[in-house]
Length: 111
Image (spheres, helix red, strand yellow):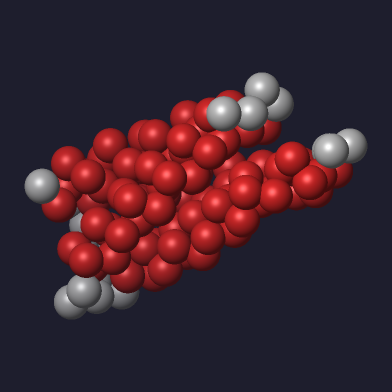
C-alpha cells in the first residue's frame, strides 16, 4: 500500500476500524435480550461491514472506481452511524463513532 498518500492512509485506517466496530456491534446485537429491537442495527452493521471490506480492497488495489466506492462507503457509514447512535448499548455507540468518522473522511475525500 505504498502508493497511498496521507489522506488515503487516514481513510484506510478509519475504514478498517469501522469494519471492526461494525462486526463487533453485529455480534453483540445478536446477544442482546431483545434481538428483535436490534434488527435494523444488525442489518446496517452487516451492510456497512461489507462496504468497508470492498472499500479497503478498492484502496489497496488502486481500483479505478475507488472514488465511487469511497462515496458509497460514506453514505452507508452515515446510515449505519445514525442507526447505531439511536441505541444506548456501548457497542452501538462505539460503532456509531467509527461510522461517523468514516462518513466524514470519505465524504470530504469525494467532495
